Image (cartoon, rainbow, N blue to C red; front, side):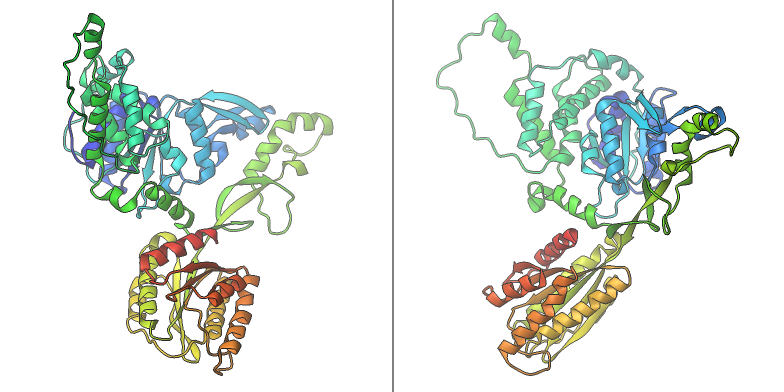
Length: 574
């Protein structure tokens, strides 16, 4: 069963998942749509017993179809509540394939996690109270183009495998019917679970589910190999598949143990019997080596403990622009009870669902009348979630001797932010101020090529018209708002204003005008980051940040990567 490479591991994971789907929970499959992904799904389905349920979970599925509820047609025809099973109950004992899981909303993910934990789905809606079995496994299809795009963390934690598939191995599929028969009889060494827990802690995996999933994977691997008990090779395969993608740190090197000065005492019968099982320390070391071999080269050295998960969470907040609740436009995210006023949109089917259980009673009480009787309490209105673009406006102090360095780092940060605009749907603009005025160097754009051309020759030097720079950036922010976008202001300055709004020189007047220009930023609720680029933090820069309602960041040596990360943090807060 030894294999190397992500595609080969994906093939092995498919076999283990077919042996124990409910116990392993499922897998996150990161792959672009195409023959490789469909081939992997086909092999998994072929390895399952004939007749195993196989259901697709589309993005944005309503609760009535996900959890089940009232069968509207049957209820209206019979005059009494008739239940209808949802997708989760239909997938009982089988596989649920979640399309575009990286864009799954947290509400759907929470309901799916509850079903995975309980093995059943509770339906308490439309006048129904049912509990239906739903023991299933989930294959979350991750089609994200960027590393920070990922399925919800709570869902991924409950799925044993996180696989990357670029091509389908050419090896023929293995039959697993006999392995499923052997699975209940597989025994476990007493030292296995403690070794799995110790290995998880060594790699910074603090979830209690990971060792349990690894234990399930080891039993399935032993059944696939024809072993009566879990052996070291089975445990090594399990930790490679389960722990490798979850690791957040490298284990510390254990100090070498000194050789014993005295020979060990003679073994009695009980101690000899215990030596037949794998030694706990040796098994733990073997598991560490197996997990270490599965780690991508250089991954942990660059990210550090927990950084990858943090980056995914930040990216998940901004990968499709800022999300706003809207009464009329956007993606439907459910319904709510309410009055049908101007601007609201009626959810006709959900309104009929709410009214259906009461039709028999209303006909008896009301006598002759319409076939379907709807009251004000039955009205259900559509809820929408609207995606809006974010426009990051860089206002850069291009004055003085450090102007070239500030402009160069601002250019680098702009290029870093634009590099993933196809994911976040963001725009970036650059305003430079020097001499006696501010200049728009880069109008709002999401084109990396256009940004590079516009920022190729950056002017620098001269006095510091700080108030003019803030005024120009604020005007650009208001224009972005009028176009339905969410503005974000990033001000890079050393805080040494010396040109007033009317163009006259003088530090006291210039600072007073800068504070006056900052007040509308706070009043408008504009998300702002002030980066103090002075060699030593300036008191006026902190005062200006407070007047703007901005987050203050001192970066004497401006770094593009640090600046880009700070902007991402402010954007999340916005």
